[in-house]
Length: 446
Image 1 (spheres, rainbow, N blue to C red):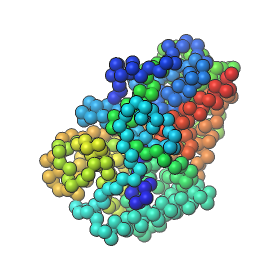
Image 2: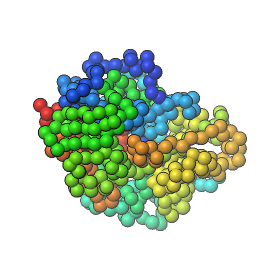
Image 3: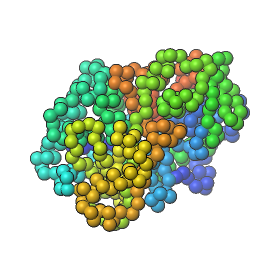
């Protein structure tokens, strides 16, 4: 969170010519019998592959989807501008590799660590007193959650916060549903307390997905190739796909806990009970974007800030808060998460867009409809390669992250945002996780 008490969110693929220009010198052809097979070509899987290849290991990355990047995905067809369906903020430690890559490759970064915003109460701007009430509520809610975590209490955030602050509902909605992708009843106080400081916090004009795609260009990735089974009964591993079986010394699994929990990948022997429990205690939360495109009307708002409005304290709230006109583009990116995010996603794009536009109309009047062009809902709820946005620990089970991270028989390793402590849920955290696990694998199989 920034020092004014306002929320800081954490959250196209390149043309053939650009992709070709980005090929690293160590790029490999697809090996038939590699040292390591990586399952999943998202941020963690791509980082793992880069690290292993740099260490002289042969690698193949298999990906069920028809593109690389996973939850980092930028395209320009929907709104005619680079639009990130998933990861949007380059966040993590000050030495996050993605920041250096972006600068080296002349991407346009915008520091977004302490932005301001507009707070509305009904159809008007909040008064100074109301703004102060919001800031006070935010501080009290945040402090209560952190105090519980600091004292080692792994409980639902809803159990420790003050109930009588008028803007508590707004604070809970931002901090829970629109940040951690779960409501306060499902948010572990330890998850919040253990989260790392994000010295790096940038928006990227070309899109985070574009940066991740360039990072992964030239890596030995086989698309449209989901893993069906991982057999780790022998000395090495065998990964079965519809294209054949890949045998390797080790395997790195980077798919989401949603995919693991759904049993999309079978394991032989079956995963031990403690591993299955860890997966079950790290269910996927949902953060979806409901993006509204307008003509040149700005409604008195400025670019790159937050638009927030009062909601009752009864949780979960039905709310959609916005990032206003990023980089001056004619879009407002709305966020819905937690239980309401799942509900609205199930109802479909039209319902989600109608709701988000209706919230804008409540603030700015019916003229907003006259300036509306079109809307869009991201599809992470039903995406078979994610089945949600990112993992949140069930209250009382923060330790599941460490359990999920433990390898099996020094042959099957796990990486990704769910185990990227302390930068869980972040694309940058996933990269660091993939890099660290790859180093562990490289040392293990020597």
